[in-house]
Figure 1 (tube, helix red, strand yellow):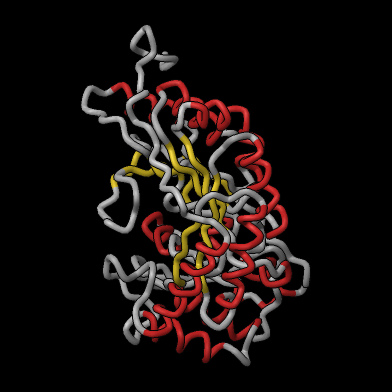
Figure 2 (cartoon, rainbow, N blue to C red):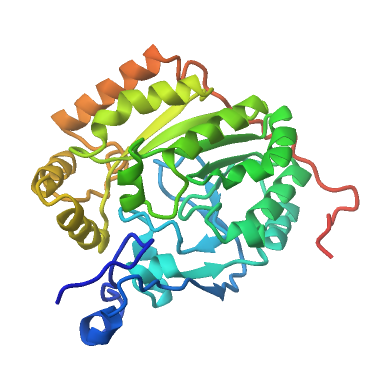
Amino acid sequence: MNLKDHKGRGSQFNLPNRFEKIHSDVNFFDEEYFEDEDKRIDTEYFNDNSKSVLTENNSPDIKAKFSINPYRGCEHGCIYCYARPTHEYLGFSSGLDFESKIMIKQNAPDLLRKEFLKKSWIPQPVFFSGNTDCYQPVERKLQITRKCLEVFDEFRNPVMIITKNSLIKRDADILTEMAQLNIVKVIVSITTLNFDLQRKMEPRTSSPAKRLDTIEYLTSKGIPTGVNIAPIIPGLTDEEIPEILKQSSERGALFAGRVILRLPHSVKILFENWLEKNYPDRSNKILNRVREMHGGELYNHTYGRRLTGEGKYADMIKMIFDSNCRKYGLNENILKLSADKFTLPRNGQGSLF
């Protein structure tokens, strides 16, 4: 069957959920579904009634013990996203479902406030978000992330934000106030500067130009901002490392990080399919280099290696990254956020009730 494109989507089909015994997909059974070449998949939103909002991380690769994710699933649709398989725990697919069926934690700000009011809470940096982007498109309307930031600001608890979306500029008023207290820093992820590649690979994220503009805008407001080159895809985006660091530095970035492509579980199938469709002549080269950096596999979950890879090619990427960081003045000073400004509201309850 010749599948037609779902416009504005990264994946083009749903994979079977690895926790489900039975799976059916309209893509494989209904020919009429593809009569309209411009058929678009509507995004659906569901209430997430989680009783807590802070997730404790057990990975030494993550720089914070706790993270917060107001959304599960991500409309950005990045084809390589390592978080895709988590949607299977909800009974959804890691494919189209991940980017078109979004779980929303509407009560996230109140849950966060409850966490900070607990006597057991030890003030410390929280990672926002560690799984799916907290500034994905629906945030423009719902403002859950903004309301959570107001709670971080209210309690003076430090937070590290990572995003691919220029929507974060909307919250510069809160972030500026927090930056003056040294309780916030922002990381803007840039995978490529190639607009055409970005649109194919990350269809609903902000363009590379807008992400660079975001770095410039936030730093102009005194908000410490850096760049994360993630993921680095060998044979496809690795040659862009020097230019991404150069342009980010010119826009005011203070620090930089890097993450090698990792393809856990079903993401392997989705990414291989995407490569065959968009870059068939480079597919084998790219996948072989990924295997080279992950001990012969497309993914190695070992802590300390899964984000940076290993072997000669990984070492070469590290050398290029480190030398260009030095060249462009990145990572010269380690910014340590302050946790000693944490405070409880005067009535002890904040605006919980």
